Length: 388
Image (cartoon, rainbow, N blue to C red; front, side):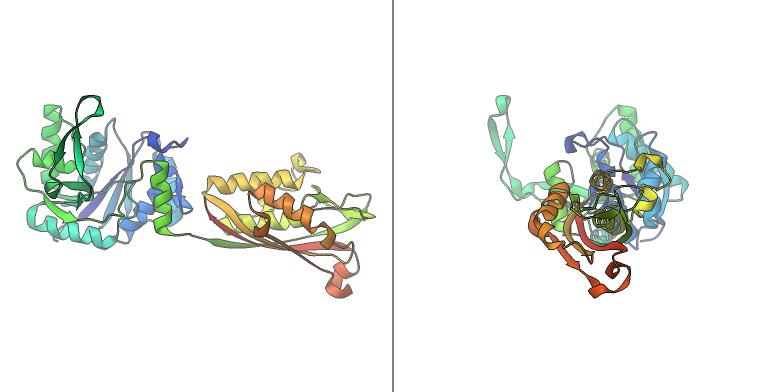
């Protein structure tokens, strides 16, 4: 294909059917924003040289910060505000793509993150022959036309019916003319190919993929996650605190009778502190020193289980949840094993896990080091997190 190829990604809708508080393009899929997942496919498609993202008006900066910059998406050349309807948003993207020198336009839904680079290549190759081509799949189910009162009126011949997808590829001048004509006529279509067809131009159907689904409902999002497979991450955390008289000894949220307790700005629960650091590490979110600095009086004598709840909220906002926990506590005294059941139950409840997904172990260090001298306690945590 000769000439510059620019992809236009309309992502300006509210996505109300998905039910989230934010537009669906910002919702997480396998730990990354849905829009980012789609842009990653375009980044991996060699034929596409640049990408224009069309976002909700006023969300340009947020789109850059949340969906583009953190992921090294070098092909994204512009983020522009969309319009009231999809067609208006596509027109805005096409205008920006023209300024980039586009000769071919690839229009692809932000909510189709499962399209593969090979599909883009095939649709582009077909468009090079006809001027316009779209991905689609033949209808596999019997299709009824409904009449009044949702009564079946007729059965359509499915052998002639295709379910339209994106990508859709057009010569830039062809799509520009189609958009201009539709605007002049006050006509709106549900896809760009419909605008081209009404001018009498040919649009080539290219076999798409059944898993190139458009994420519209919560069920679609779950299905996409299932197709992508689990994107597990592992994190490790460590913490140590000095033992001091007159302090409570709290481990994994459980009060343990002992003549000394752990000294710290908060309740100094080394087990939960190590766990929080492991969770933040797995999600790439820093550590508890950054999130809960000991210079902040708000965290003086804070309950570490409450801090854990805030860490879990932060992970959830990034699309992650704990899947498995392994925690090792280093203590010469007191004996930790008798408290395992209460500690496992406390942690499992806090993280919405089964008790079998939380493992606890302890070591005395055989009298070695600061733990062996009973100067302090320490804890190691390893966690696995998974997409929510």
